[in-house]
Amino acid sequence: MIRIGHGYDVHKLVEGRKLIIGGVEIEHDKGLLGHSDADVLLHAISDSLLGAAAKGDIGCLFPDNDDKYKDADSLELLKEVVNFLKSEGYSINNIDATLIAQKPKMRPFIEEMRNNIAFACGVLIDNISVKATTEEKLGFTGREEGISAHAVCLIEK
Image (cartoon, rainbow, N blue to C red; front, side):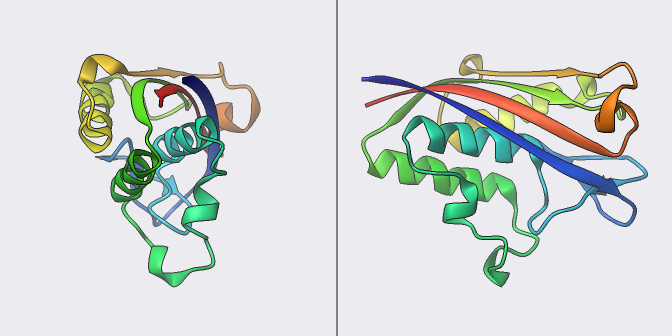
């Protein structure tokens, strides 16, 4: 059985936080606000995987009102999602994700993000796609108020 999942996440950019995307710390004057490390890309990917298995979203597994997940490393959370899916009999076929950010430019970090995601998911890097785009200064991402990400995946049982 092949199943598809979609995930979406968004976080506000604020001063005084590290910017961590795809498990990569990126030099920037602002970071993403959230209960965990606010890794918007990994959250969208986790949601796509859980959605494909009809198991809810990351908020179900890692509630934002639980101090256990305060400043949590989203790569570790993604590993937990993958282990949960494996325990349910699923394997990951591929993941395709898109980051939406006006700044900073993501291209220099995409290969490291792909490596991190592939490792966390236990798949080859060829099964992981990460792209980035701007919104030509339109909307909240274009005004540099936040960063969003979409992800789709195929899983098999």
